[in-house]
Image 1 (cartoon, rainbow, N blue to C red):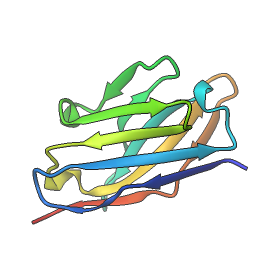
Image 2: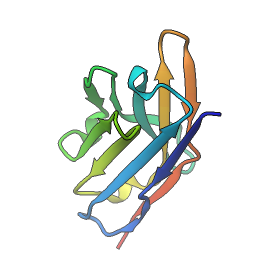
Image 3: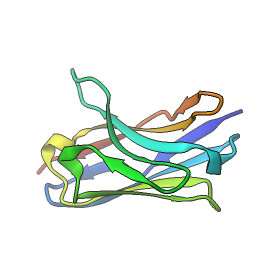
Length: 117
C-alpha cells in the first residue's frame, strides 16, 4: 500500500517560512521523481518544484530563489523549504511521486498553507 503523508503546513505571516515534509512508504523511493504541487481556490493545480532521482531540480518561476526542494532517500522523505512567503503562495500543497519506467503516479492528501497577516 502506497502512502504519501504530508506535514508542516499552517498559517504564517507574509515574509515568514515553512518547511513541508512528505514521508513515502510502499514505494522504492529512490526511483521516483518527487514533486510538490499546489492548488489555490478556483485555480488549477500547478507544479511548484520537482526533484529527480538524480537530484536535479526545477521550480515554478514565481518561487525561484524562495523555495528549495530536497530529498533524503534514507528517510524516504522529500522536503519543501519555503522562505519569504507571500499571500499568493496560499494553497493546498500536494506531494507527488512519479516513476517514469512504470508510469506509477501517487499523490498525498494535501496540506494547507495560508500566508496572511
